[in-house]
Image 1 (cartoon, one colour):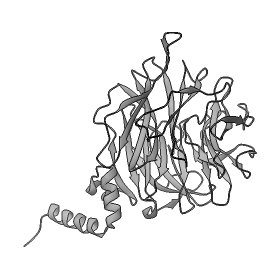
Image 2: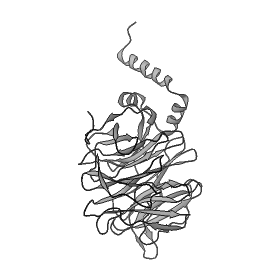
Image 3: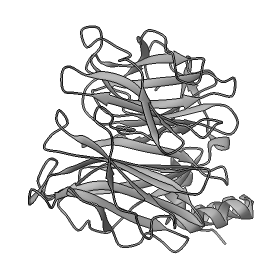
Image 4: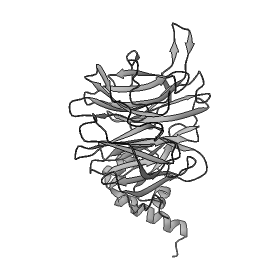
Length: 369
């Protein structure tokens, strides 16, 4: 009996599925609705992808963040009529194994004393080692005049304590998650846009005190913002920054983020768009970013053993449109979860197995064919 092509494909797919470890299949099923044929046919290391909502409750959404919670993951983003509109608030959705919950507002920019509502911007979720879930976000008319806000949750975001405004001159992590140092201090990559784009590092000590470095760059050299922090096993910390100069820039610290090297360009292109990454349990850095100097497509994944030489791993998006502002974490099971803006109308979620990635060298900044 001669099988049809479809039958042959399905048999191959079934055999491939059965070859996966049961732990991989159970975790994937908890967190993403997988199109198995699509993910197997695309690229090694990708489970698949899904939208956070069938349809968002507002017209425009952007700048997602993601964190691991007990039994699942949680994501947040800002959304409203459009970026900068007065009705833009912070939205949140949870996935504890049975799909993403209906998006609900988690924070807003209402000033009751002045009877005015300001737009919200750039949420950052981070779960501390003590179990507290933090939600940093910005409120204000625009990025040149916004201020930092912080909410805390003791139950993984089901309820929140009253939001507090950060001290003057501090914004907290401006777009990407902080890193927690051995003593519990949070090192936050922050940036200012009020008098030229400048990157600064802020420290949140004992959940009480704030301190900061001087700017790591001169806007005359590099107009840089929105640093992502990569903490390597040898104790070094790298920050990679969004710029207007066509490439990501970097600085390094070897003393826990107190002192930083002079900012330099990397070989990785940047179209004036946010990037994010994490250092994996195996010591490699994984970075999600737009590997182009213009536009916000494609959206790419690269890995590096030292933060200096990067290799191409995945292309998450390559169609016309905007695929931007990724947020990246590795969960306790070893999987990497990425959320990002999908054409400003939805937030997309991708699950990656970093152990299965197949990489190719990036030579002189060129993505391999």
